[in-house]
Image (tube, rainbow, N blue to C red):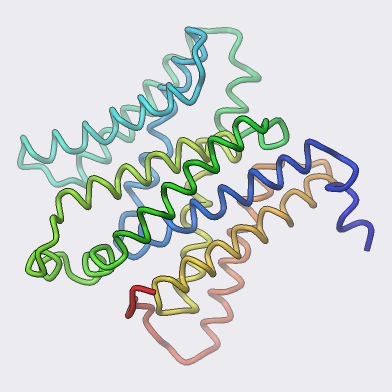
Amino acid sequence: MDVLWDPFVQSAFMQRALVAGIVIAIATAVVGTITVLRGMAFLGDALAHGVLPGIAAALLIGIPSVIGALAGAAVMMGGVAAISRRTRLSSDVAIGLLFVGMLALGVVIISRSSDFAGSLTDILFGEVLGVTWTQIAWQAGVAVVVVALAWLLRRPMLLMAMDPDQARVAGYRVGLIEAILLGMIAITVVASFVVVGALLVFGMLLAPAGAAALVTRRLGSMMVVAATIGIVSTYVGLLLSWHFDLAAGASVVLTAVVIFFIVASAQGLMPSRRPHPEHAA
């Protein structure tokens, strides 16, 4: 049994990686569940990639990458809102255009420097084995904010997942809640990219939440199950990366995706049932 615990007992950086992964698993479970129920997977993917030019620019000019990621996420969200509001194009078109545009801009910025090789790998696939306690503290703060907002807004978010018009009739400010939800997705993506990278963070948002949605119909239970899957994926992924010399962030996300397909396959053997949130908790 030592093989299951030794990496985390013997290595300080593996301990930090595990703690960081657990924190991010909780944040992405909460936001990912709402994203899955609202059918906002495309937006989540776009935000995960939209931070790339901000991070690249931040590294080029020598400021913290988190600041660049926040700027990139803000530009992405602001651009989607502006295009949707000022043109007759649907939000999907706006998201798609900005997704491609931001990704292309990130590649252009990266191409301007010959010193980006190592940094690019960290940006795209994360540096969970190099995470610091300061970064973990920042990520924990984000997780607390996300969980608190989800708890406070659980009823309107549940109604909006079922029927936005019903939420309006109930007197909730749907536009404001949408903006808060976008902000929750954005800060979760920014906090997570250090652990699993800009290309892989979408997997942690979607896979645990998608698996949870297949096995439970209650919103609160979905978040708990998604967080549990995310934590298990973190532990197993880090363990595999240690013993088989694999990329840590990618191993964590791949484990989460494999768990999703295992759950989906098991669900296919059971009587058909369409996941749908019924209660706020």
